[in-house]
Image 1: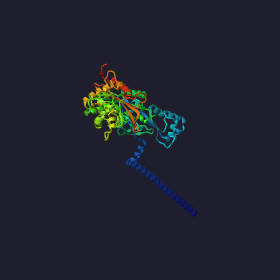
Image 2: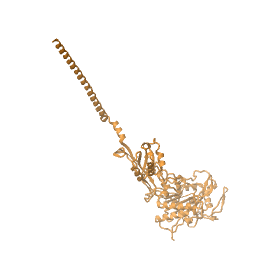
Image 3: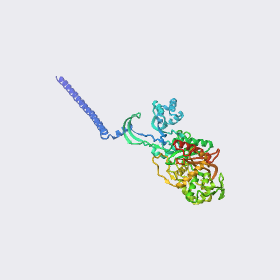
Image 4: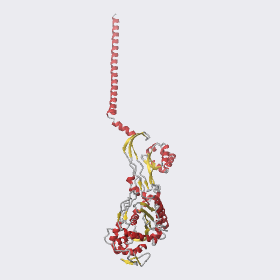
Length: 577
C-alpha cells in the first residue's frame, strides 16, 4: 500500500512539474509576441510619422528632388528681324535650322564610336567627314560637344530617325542673305554668337536681335514636353528693318563697278547714290565684295564698307566748293579773267594737264584748271575754304546710321599753312574724304545749298535741312557743272535727253609720306539739272590699265548707273534731242 502511495505521489509531482513548465513556456511566448507587435507597431508609427513629416509637413525637399528630374527650364528664341530694301526685297532673313550636340561619354558607353559604318552614316547626315566626327567624340570626358551649328531640317529628321542615344538636337536659326555679294558690305554679317559684326547687322544689332522667352515645363525621359507649366520671362521677336537701298540700283551698280575694275585692273571701286530730296542712300556698292553665305574663304578686307571707311584726297571734285568759298568771300567774281600759265610756289611747279593762257571761273571749272584754283585758294586763304568744307559736311560724319563711318580730315585745327599747301588745297590735296561724304556734299550742291541729313533707312517724312550756301551762286554753279559734262572733261558722263552736272577728279595716292604714281579716279554728278533728283559718286582706286583720269575711268560707270536710275524712277527728260 505504502509503495502504491509513493508511486502515486511521484506521478502527481511529475504532472505538477510538467504543468509548471508549460506555464513558463506560455508566459515566454506571450512576452515574445508582445515584443514583436510592439516593434511592428513602433515601425508603423515611425513610418507613418516619417511619411507625414516628409509628405505633409515638410514636402519641399522631395518636391525639389522630383522636379529636378522632370521639370526643365527651356528657352524659345524668335527669329532675328528681317532686313529689306525700300521696296520690300528681302536682304537678310533667319532660316529655321537645327543645332546638333553630342554626349561623348554616352556615345563611347554605348559603343557607337566603335561602329565605323554608323559613324560614316552619322557624318554623312551632319555633312562632315567621319574622321572629324570621331575626333570630336572619341574623348569620353566631353559631355557636350557641338557637332553642327546649322543643320537643315530634313537632315535633322534623318538623324532623329536613327534613334541613337547621346545626341541632342536643338532649334536654331541661320542667317541667309538672298542677294549675296551685291549687298554684303552694306547689310553685313553675324558672328558665331549671332551678333552683328559688319554693316547694318552691326549698326542696328540691338533692334534686330530677338529676346528669348523662358518657360518651365515637365519633360519625360526622352525630353518631350508633357506639361507646360508657365512663362518665366517673356521674350520678343527681332524688329524688321527697311533700308533706303533700292536693290535694283544696287545690283546694277555692282555690275558696273565690276566691269570697271576688271577693265582697268583697278584695286577696288565704290559708288554711292543719294536721293537729293530726302538724303536717303539709294545705292552703296563696293567691288570686290564677298559671299556672306559662304565663310570658307572669308577675308575681312572685303567685308568692310569702303564707302564709309576708306578715305582719299578728292582732287578736282572739290573745286566747285572752293569756288563757292571764293564767291561768298567776294574776293572772286565770275567775270574775272585769270592767268593760267604754270607758276612756281615754294619750289613746286603748278601746271595744268590741258594748258590754257587765260580763263574766267567758269572756264577754270569747265577744264579743271589747277593753276586757276590754286590762285583762288591762295587769295582767299584756308580759313574761308575750310569753313565752306565744314558747311558742306566734310571733315565730320554724315550720321548715316552706319557703324564704322570715319570723319575724314580737313585739317581744320592746323595753324600754319605754307603757300604751296594753300595752293594745293584749291584742287583737292591736303584733305581726306569718304565717298559718302562727297555724295552728301554734292547732294547739297544739287539741292541749291540745302543740306539734308543722310539716312541708310527709308524715310517717311521729309527731313529738316540746313541752308549752307547762297542759292543764286549755286544756280550759276549748276550751269558751269553742266558745261563740264557737255563740253569739258566729263563728256563720258553725258546722257541723252537729260541735262547732267558733274565734276571729274584725279588725285595721286599718298604712301609712306609722299605721293606715288598711283591714282584715285572719281566722278561726282547729279541729274536732271532742271529738278535734281539723284546724286552719284563713283570712285576707282589704283586703275592700272588704260587711262587713270576720272573722266575716262569713273564717268562711264556713272553714265550707266545714273541712266538706270532715271529710267527706274520715271524721271522726265529735261533736254531736247
